[in-house]
Image (tube, rainbow over all chains, first blue to last red):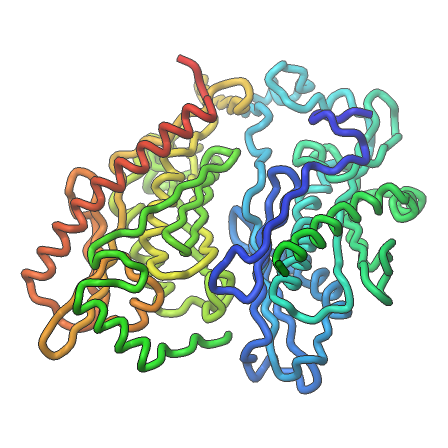
Length: 273
Length: 284
């Protein structure tokens, strides 16, 4: 199946990453899936406030900030997900009574606001959006499941990747690295109640999706090796367990994430020179 | 919230001595501005401004809301300037320090109270639907003078942004997608730019620098911010506390600011034109 940007179902958008981009932070990184770009910064080990202090390990503080608007419940929930993903991977016990502060900011993201025509005329909005000005031929997709659950899922995956790269740049000791990719299930055109899996959805595809998942894999000695093991899944929407089992066992899905790992290793080698 | 290390005595003495001979650490003249580097994003209304190592991103977005009942013809301009720990770790997420509050207030006065954006042109159906323009300013790196950097990014983003075209028939509103109808730019009366000066007052001399770096602002005795537009009009003048300044010094500094703002306005205009040629929105 070819998508609107002519990718195949399991093709990622072009990846880009850079490190050491902020002067006042110990570590920083910028990760992009196409034109969705996320910047992460890490400071640590640093002075900790009394109420955050832990006697046997570092306190990990994560702040997630969206591009538009203020941080709301979805940012907070993703902070919790990131915390549970990164706490086992970072060697926090190396720095007791300290703070490792991770801040993640969406740097640039396309918007879908006003990409479709809408009207307040009650008659016009009742008709199927078959006008040529509509970017999404949503009337041809038939499903009873609610759609649009995937909003922000590629952003979440990019945030995990940027965080890992920033931690590496800050030289915080970790057991391995965590990388993630987003997967969405969109209804098949013309076929009822059938969905197909696409990797790294664009905002338009996120609006069409009936369910979306962020899969996080850890790579490193003892935490998944070179093939990686799945350490986190964040799902939203209506789906069956068979659908979720498919991405985990797909080898070529892992190889896509491995490409990101290779890019990182390359970046680290360049820094070490 | 890790605190910043205080500058050492040798750093402080060196900076002051160098300033007395008219030299700054980065080689600039005392009244030289760092040349801003502007970058535009794929979507309209995203601008990144770099002043040396200080980086600020401004993102403009729009939505349709109900106007206030006592002002049915006016739209809204909402400015959000939360400083995250990314700018520097001494900024706390969620809690604003004194300097943050000052920065937010100055930006608001410069952009909103100075009526830079015409709010009546944002009206769609009086009393029912108006545009609410939201300007989110993200501070990525604080190497001094985030205020000036933010004001350049903000005004450039507002001039770069275009809102979707709207057709009103009676009380029915049709918002056209940006793919079918050319989006409409905002009505901007004038472009205010902030100019921040830092003062170092010793017992016998008073030294002034424009666009202080982080180290210079930590060592200074006070700052003065003057917001001007290219028509040499003062929009905001703010000197909060700090060492006292003579009237002549203030006048001199305002004149220097007026000159610099004219150059800045030209720079922003050129950058916008270049971006307009690269990313063609409409063909007339």
